Length: 303
Image (cartoon, rainbow, N blue to C red; front, side, top):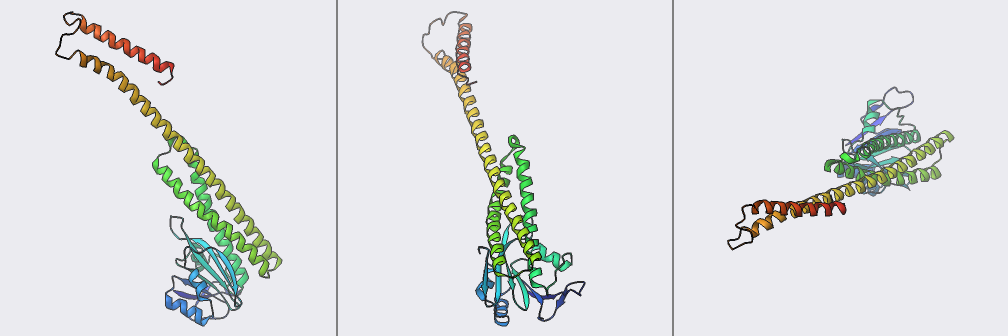
């Protein structure tokens, strides 16, 4: 779907346009092939770059071609699961274009009017989009970090479900690390190739610092998850060893009376079989053997 929006410094709200106008914002969501061809033909945009904005495996990058700037970033897909999608921003002399499979939450905020977005000021609009994407990643990263820290504080109470959650967090954080890394490279390249006002350069520098902090935070959380996972493996190994030890001890203790009763249960002549106290002698013998094994295990610190 292709929608045209426009807002000037004189407008209080963003307006929906029926047709294209200079200085407008073209918002494209889940376009069909005909719409991709239309954008490429009418606005002289590179079709391959437009398709790259829909490829979830595309690496974030910036490309300068035919007086247009193509910026491919990663954004969060709306929903509880923190999955990433490619997000294309095109800066042209006459318009700014955004394209994605699913409309990100920050685009919805712009349309609701909660974000100051002047479409006629393309570079300002670009910085606004960068800032919104940064904030989105920052919030998602902090949510994961809080969850990881809560699991770290309850190591001895972790269960399989908690470990599965941590593994999901680990996969998300790995994708965030890659996104933060490439996003910083994009900021650096744009800063070198696009002429900004000094105050705008300061904004980009602040965004680079935020992205770098997010990168470091993700790396730290990944290390924490790795430590938690290793600790959990050690706990499981110790529990398994304790269970095996207990079963071994029980087997030894059970095998003694089983062996003695098996021998004295045979239908042959046995020593002391006519002695009326033989039953008590056998019990005493079993008890003595048990005590011998008990003292041996205790000395070896098996129990």
